[in-house]
Length: 429
Ligand SMILES: C[S@@+](CC[C@H](N)C(=O)[O-])C[C@H]1O[C@@H](n2cnc3c(N)ncnc32)[C@H](O)[C@@H]1O
Image 1: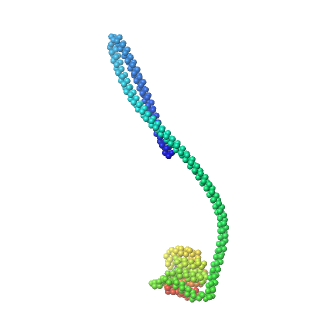
Image 2: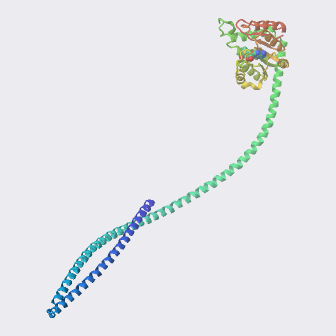
Image 3: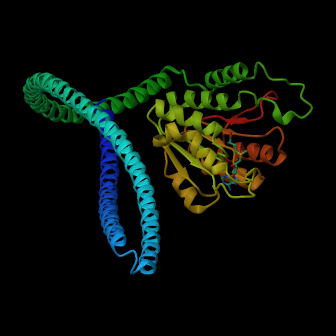
């Protein structure tokens, strides 16, 4: 509002100044006209004076003419003619001056009326200007009033905020001191916890050792009781085989797939059976993408054992076309703490000595499917106290021959069924 009035005021002031300039110009023009008028008047006066003088001279000449009519009639006549001509000239001049005077007077009147109009406009503008100034003053006064009102409100708000701030600061200090106290307690608890953790780890270790001893004792006990007769183990394994081949289609055109549906689970169940009877770790030779490995690793983790996973994962060797090792790592990820990966051929001397130095309770031979390689693998794990499973007897005659030869060499009893693709070499009890 104030800004609009201010703007209007500026406009009016501008107009007023322009009008003032125009007025000044008109005044100076008027002044010039007056001067000219005065000059014309004095010229007229001069002419009138001359005219009077001429009349006077003419009168005198007439009188003189009466007296000297006789002597110089001719001279007087001439002089009269000259004077008459002068008189006519003077009268013409007089008429011209009078008409000029009339014109000048007209111009002057025009200027005067213009001046009057201008004065009216000027007065009007001055009146408006004054009005606007008054309005501006009023707005300013209102503004000042409002300002002082809002200043007071702001001040009040500021005070309130300040007091809130003080309260918050106090609260903050309280919280900080509480926090410090809590931190102290926490640190104490943490050190206590560390202590307890150490104790706990020792207790865990003791417990694992005790568990292992218990298992061994149980096993010894069962052995003493005669539970671990080869017959009872065969019976248990046959049960597992039957349970896991229930849904198999035994009329498949090629028999190598028989016993495949739940094979991974079956191998894991046999491994768990072994873990509960014999001490030692588990081994898988030929792991591929780790479908069986993850289940065996789970068993190892559950019973606090380890799983040896042996495979070179070499392109072109037995099913490997690339990416198998990465898939294997992904599969065993949750149990990797219990898995020892041996990325070597099981025929490698280094791998053989690593395996030989490990106590085993279960072995799964599923590496290179040639007679020599399979037989070598069976010999490599022949120190296993539990069951040795050998895969793919049903479709690979070389593996089948190696299985039977291996059983003969390591003097193991064999268990293999036509509904199952793998065969088992039983523990020497
Ligand atoms: C049939 S797959 C194993 C399948 C796996 N046991 C399972 O149940 O999912 C055969 C694997 O044997 C591995 N292999 C080939 N030659 C080997 C060797 N000399 N030593 C160990 N593993 C070998 C291959 O790399 C391949 O991953």
